[in-house]
Amino acid sequence: MSHNETLADKVAANIRAEMAAQRKNAVELAAVLSIGHRAAVRRWSGQQAFSLNELSKVSRWLGVPSSTLMADRARLQAVAS
Image (cartoon, rainbow, N blue to C red; front, side):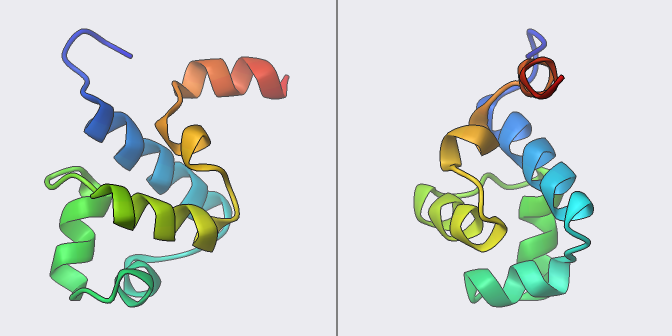
C-alpha cells in the first residue's frame, strides 16, 4: 500500500480485480448491494468507500474472504506464486 493509498482504495481495487477475473460488472454489483447503478460505480471506482455490511455482501458474492479484499495486492500475488 502506498503512503497515500487508503484501506478504502485498496478494497475498491481488490474488488475491481476480483470482479474482472470473474467477469462481473457494476450492474450485478448494484443488484447484490441493493443500490442504484451510479452508487455501485462510485463504490467500484473508489469514490465512495464500501461499508462493512457491503464488504460482507460482496465477499460472499465473489466467494472470497473479506480479508482477501482488504489485503495488499502485491502480497496476494506473492502468495499465489
